[in-house]
Length: 302
Picture 1: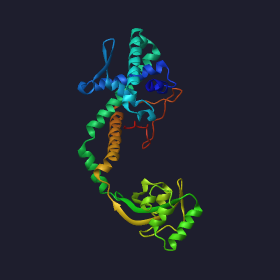
Picture 2: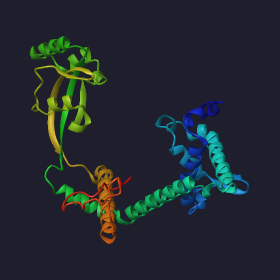
Picture 3: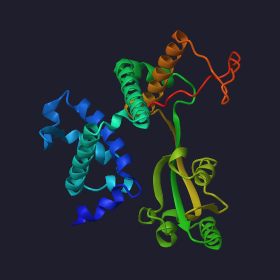
Picture 4: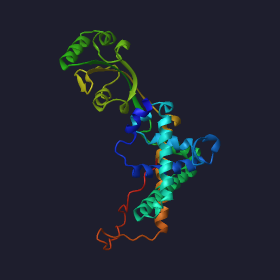
């Protein structure tokens, strides 16, 4: 019953025509899965044609973020029915020669181009993005200034008002122990541990907190309350250090960077081999871009 009650949330404002177009994308994903049938079992048949699990998984990836957090077992029956419906609609469209409609032909051509483009980009990235290149890029970044991240071992006391924060500062300046004051007055989750946040980098906390914390020297406590969206803070810096990110920590960002470089190089090569003419919206010739000006935005690498 729960799965059925969620059905309207899947396509709240989607027409059957749009749903049928969605089936094209899922079919492309299913074709890709057929290269390894052992890992993509048949989960249904429609008029004798197999429906693979990959099609259901593709449908799940198209769900809103909130629904993607739900267990696949809970959504499976609903998604399988949706994939079957898509297949039935596509089959009926074939029987009625819907693809001969000029509008359908244009939409199919665009969808085909999009699928081919996606596969080409992905294949090119997979061929060029090797472990050797990633490690070489890591070593290159490691040799550059600023590679090591500055970290601070920070404690803080979080209260709800500026007056409370000023009272806490007075206590600390009077010789009170920071940890004990944090345990007594802080409303933050670190209160039981004396306000200890451990080592943090600038990008791990909100900007206002980072600016105040990294302006303090080791052993120094803020003399003015620091306001953030969470309340008012009194900050104490225990220690500072510089830490180089490991290869494993850097790999996801490096992978994205290398993928962008690969796609950019691919497009530049294709542009160099192609004859391209540009026209304005009224069809009149468009002047060629001056040297050094970007011609067009490059496709993003996933």
